[in-house]
Image (cartoon, rainbow, N blue to C red; front, side, top):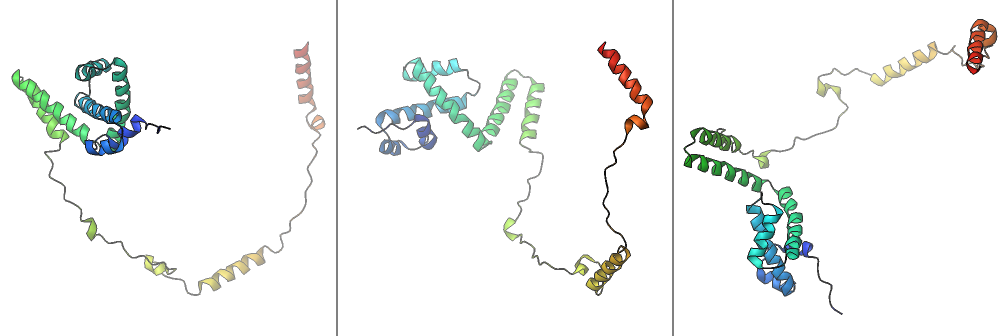
Amino acid sequence: MSKKQPDTLEVCRRSLFAAKEELDALYTEAMVLRVLRIRDLYAWVIANPDAKDRQFVEEHLYRYRLSKFTAYSDLAIIKQLLPSLSAASRDWHRWRSNEMFLETYSMAKKRKDTRTMERAASAYAKYNRVDIEDEQTVPWEQLLPQPFTATDDPSVLGIKPIPNLQEKIDALLDKYRAETIDIDDVDFEEVDLEENVLFPNQLDESDTLFNDSNQ
């Protein structure tokens, strides 16, 4: 009984940048060749982020002379691998932005377009914060947590403590209980309002309107 072949996407997630010797020890020859191919084209996609799917397929066919089906299959795997890169770090996006600034500056310089050169240089400086002094590193290892001790002493907040506080609380409770000793709870009954007696005219008018609307 042959072993089940591992999923190509999972293999690429685990071992896309592993050494070939390591790949040879873990996977079949066919799997190793595909991982190496996807690694190669993965690097091409990173270097050409604006490329269309059609351009990727053309590059795939040019490099490996395989079918379009294989090219689109490899592309599907690469597209699932790319979000992991962007989620893991923004370093690549920073590098790519700097490359775009420098490329724009270089093209403007060839055209002697000083205005575009100035704008590209300004964007580069602003993005990389070259006009701001380097922030000093915070010595986190030297920061010690402040000791904390629970207390019921209000004087630590600058409040003068009341002497014999519990006795005064008990005295106030006895005082207010004595003042409310004559208050008794009583039962009550719901009042059955005779609305037809209290509001005879209004009921007659509503009855008339209701009867008229039904005619």
